[in-house]
Image 1 (spheres, rainbow, N blue to C red):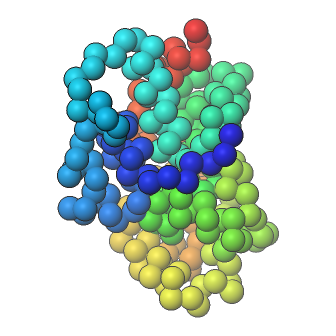
Image 2: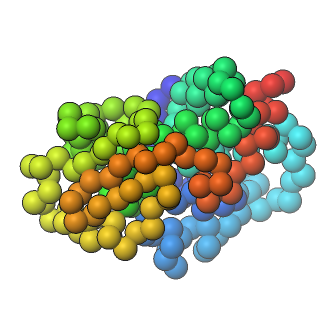
Length: 208
């Protein structure tokens, strides 16, 4: 399955909530869901009552699109979460939070998941001092993520570092914006994720 390359604001409207796919635009008056909150399409304005399956599907799609994960990838994450001890839904969110592109986003060195993914693909970051270009890589407690030395002098990363300095990172990350680094000090817990997920609906979707 190919990665979605269409207008991302359409995805927010489809899920009925801001997925913060366009960075600062999502918090401005230009946000599509603020200007037109109806579902895209000819019959988007119709008031349709969703059944149980539809509600579960939309929660799965919302979560998958928020993190920018493909369908097969998301199913693989669920299978891995299901094999681990503890609550499957919480394990799933923890895995998604530990993706390298998400960590870069949480550190404040990207304005969106999409931008974080692109920066990682272009090898602007190192993991424990080694070059890395895999956005889906799962980080561990103790890992150190840094902006590559050669990239720090660019105006892009200087601006990102300024933004990161005022950015509030989750407590499982320790960010030093002036040094262009961040450290995973603990594994993320469910309460550390402030986006509105109902992971139980995702568990029910895959349990059918």
